[in-house]
Length: 319
Image (spheres, one colour):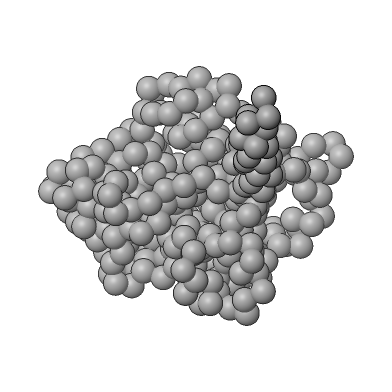
């Protein structure tokens, strides 16, 4: 028994160290942010009733759900946002499953896509590229930047600016508040917003990146919050780029993000604010007409905006 005592002591010390280490690790359990007072969000959205300067045709592109419920809920998010967008004066919305027809491209002013992009043919890639170059806008969300096989990813990047290189080169990871989302608040899409925002979600980085792509959102350790500029954040060795980007090709504008994995993220007012700001930027419009959507359906009778539901009990649907 005396001989075993030193070994037992070592084991107990090792176990204690492991427990302390585990406590220090960031908790990545999926959970929404706490609801926020509406008055605080109104400081960022404003409270005016501006109208779009022109009629806008939005085309929402979605695909079959491919994760467990509460993640990559392409159909559910389409069913959430399409009716909301239709409440904006001068906006009409069409839908496409997997990929639009040429007739739909011809009518659309902006394409909002949330799906795992199917293997596009050379003809489809040219349709897409032509849509952007003639002046079509794109809002690309989360896995929409991924199209397999990766050998055609470069061609896809010509359409939206960034695309997945392949599993050996591009990276993905969940993130929590220990990796804040830093914003380039000098960019017109994010001007006037906080320097950093916190979510519990997922993102990708190290993507194929075309010329004219500008990173406007990056995830980085919380310790970088003392940095004085967004460019400092991008230079950090631990920064995860491509959280948000913009891209211009021909006359078209693309606003992209690799965030938006969890369904509850779309019920977060700050995330909606980022998406609606991006949508307005692609259209070269004042974002004010889209700001009511930041609050729609997620404001309770106490004046709090958001959700406490993790929504992981949703059931996937193919269509």
